[in-house]
Length: 212
Length: 142
Ligand SMILES: [Zn+2]
Image (cartoon, each protein chain N blue to C red):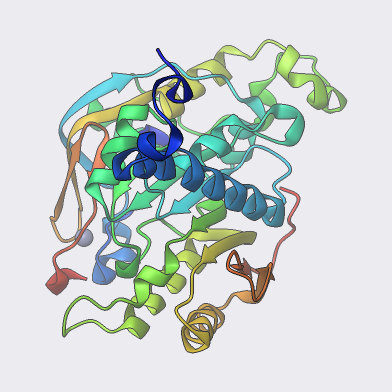
C-alpha cells in the first residue's frame, strides 16, 4: 500500500472524504479513548467487574474495558446499551466482547437491582435531554435513566458519565436529576473554559465498600 | 447474549420491572452459540454471589441444557482443593476446578444468538438478532 505522502501533495490528498475518514478513524477515536481512560481512573475499579456502558456506540470504550490487564485489575466484563442500530452494527463487525442491546436509556435500565459494579457513559447523556415526542419530557427521560441506573448498581458502586452540556442550565438539570435518583454526585471539569473542556459527572451509590 | 446477562435482565416495562413474574425472561425459539473466552477467576468469584441460581436453573431447563446442582457453588469450590485463601493472588496460575470451568462455559461462553425473550408478566417479546437484543419499547409501553 502506498503512503499518502508518496502519491499526492497533502493539500490535494486531504480532500473532504479523506479528512472525514481521518477524523472518524483516528482523532475521534483518540479523544474517545482518552475520555474512557479518564472515566476509568475515576471509577477506580480494582478487580474484574461487571460494567454497564450507556451509549456504547461501536464499542470503543468496551474494547478498552475488555483489554485491561490482570495486573491493572481487569479485564472487565461489560454490557452496552445504544439507541443506534448502525453503531451497534459496527460493534458487531468488530466482534467486541461485551453484550450489546438496542435500547434507549431514556426509557430506563432493564436490569435487576444491584447488577453492576460500575457504569460508564461517554458523550451520551446530553442526548437524553432531547425529548422526542409530545408525550416525553427531558426531565422524564433523565429521571427514568438515573433512577434505573441507581437501582441497577450495587451498593458502593460508581458511575462516571462524560457528557457535552449545551449550557449551564442543562448541566444543572442533569446533575440534579442524578441527585434526585439517590446518587452522591460531583461534577468534574477537565481543561475548563477551553475548546477541549470535558465534563464528567461522578456518581456514587452509598451503603457498601468500593473494594469488591 | 451471554447467559450471564440473562441472569440480570428484566422486562423493560415500568409496570413489570419490580414484579417477580418479569424475571427471568423466558427464551423462545432460541438458537444458542458458544464463543470461547478467556477464563477469569476473579470475575467469576465476584459475580457468584450476585447470581439468581434458581433463575439460572430455570433457564437451563428451558434451553434444554444439563441440569444444574440445587444450589450455587461456594466460592471455594472454584479453586483446586487445598488452595489457601492466601493463594488467591496467584489464582491465575492455579488450575480452575471443573466446577469453575463449567460455570465459565455456561455463563460467559454460552449465549443466545437468535430468538426471542418473553416477559412472564406482560408477555412482551424482545427479539434477539445476531446476539443483540432489541429493548426499544414503543412509547405507550414505557
Ligand atoms: Zn413485562
